[in-house]
Every structure is written in structure tokens, then in C-alpha cells.
Length: 318
Image (cartoon, rainbow, N blue to C red; front, top):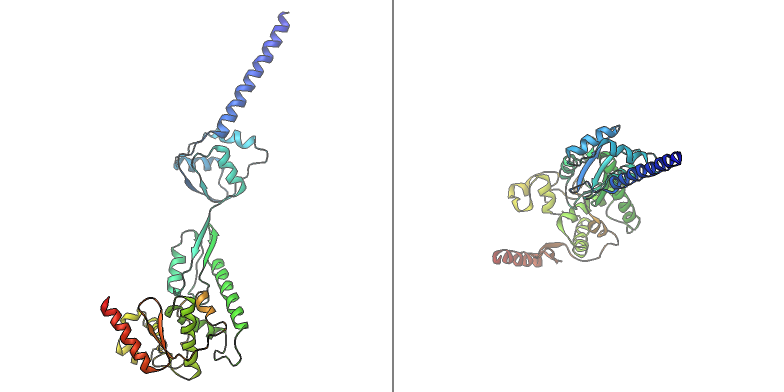
């Protein structure tokens, strides 16, 4: 009888211990230990002990024993993946291990704005701390303005390659529909003209009309006379153009040189590029700002001068 009582006591004791251990594991598995959303960069070959030390510096305190226990009782072996993570508020140890295990890293974005230049692009790429690698001097026009998504450490050169392929795709599509006897000789000239239109106009409709003016001028062997090309050549804005600049032989001075400038002057977006697809036929040779973000167009220089007066009157009123 005494022997049976001992066995019974041992069984009850084991059940009690197992129950305590079980409830302890369950508690630490779901216990919320993260006080606020926390960004964490997990580098390659970081040991689990190093992970806990780094998390502690970010005010996420986890006992090594608890961390190891949770990792050992997982259904699959715990192998954390390197990357940048957002550990959300109220996460548990299991939650943290799950995002490391599944590689749920942060997806960041880089935006190339329409009309910016290679100088702007290079500066933005180098200042972006989430990208990696060096870049050389960049060409104008060849990258597509858009929003691009990437993960921490993504190489800058790979991002540029994606941006160039995207721009090439649009160029190829537009070139496919070029009219017969097109005044533009190749896709590079198409890109150059689109980059000028980008700096001159904003909406698609306005871009198409501006494109028609430039096409008409090229077809009639007239100078483009574009302020934005001159401003680019002198690295200034259109409001600071002087008479001396207008008379200069700067390569981008389309008041002095006939035809297109030697290179694009910006990264044109889809509106500017599409303005050269199915060219809008007009008899316009001139345009000037209407003071409201678009332009007034005219067929003759006489009408153009009247439109200039209207523009100056608007400026005076403002």
C-alpha cells in the first residue's frame, strides 16, 4: 500500500512539473515583449546570442534560455535569415523568430521624379543608406521615372539596370508606331526631344501640343528656341536666362544651334514620351505659358507676341 502511494505521488509530481513547464513555455511563447515598433538589421552570420544582445540595445529584452527554448520547440529548425526587419509593437519571442525564419524583411522604395537630371539621380542614389555599391557618372534620359521597390543592401547598379530596361521598353513601344518619314532619326533623338518636352509641359494634352510645335519646327528647319535647353546648358533655371546666354554658342543653346541638343536634358516620364506616339498634327510654331501651368499656342509670330503680352500681364497682376 505504501509502495502504491509512492508511485501515485511520483506520477502526480511529474504531471505537476510537466504542467508547470508547459504553462511556462506557453506563457513565454505568447508574452508580448516589444514596447514599440522597432527596426532591426540582422546581418549574415550573426549568432543567436549576438541577436539578443543587439535587440537588448533596442530595448527588447529576451532571456537567452527563453529564446533557446522557443527555438528548440519549433516545428521546423530555427534558421534566421539576414535582412532588415520591422519588429512590431506587442510582438512575442515566437513572433520575432517567425519573421526572422520566414525572411519577412522590409521592402523600401526609391522614386525617380520626372524631369530630374543625372546629377539629381546620382545624389539621391548615393544618399540612400539602404542601397549598396558604387556608381559611376550617369547618362541623362535613359532611366524611367517611377517608384522602384527593393530590400536592404540592394545594389545601386542593379536598380539602375531595372530603371534603364523600363525606359527602353517604353522607347521601343513608341518607336514601333513612328510615322513614315519621321523627322527624328532614331530612339536617341526621340529621347532627347521627350526630355525637352518634359521640362516644358506637364499634362499629356499640353505635352502633345508642345511636341507638335517642336516637330513642326524641326520639319521646317527652324531653331527650337527652347529656354529649358539653354538653362540646362548653363546649369541655371529658365528665369535667369540673359541676353549673353541667348547669343552664346553653348551646345544646348537652341536659339543659336539648329536641331536637337547633343543629349537629353532630363529623365522624361510617360506623358512626355507618349506625346511623341501618334503625333498630334497642328499648324503651331510657337507657345508661351498661360500662367496656369499650361501654354497658349499660335501659328504665327504676330499671334505669339500677343500671347506673350497676355503672359506678361498675368505676371504683372500676380
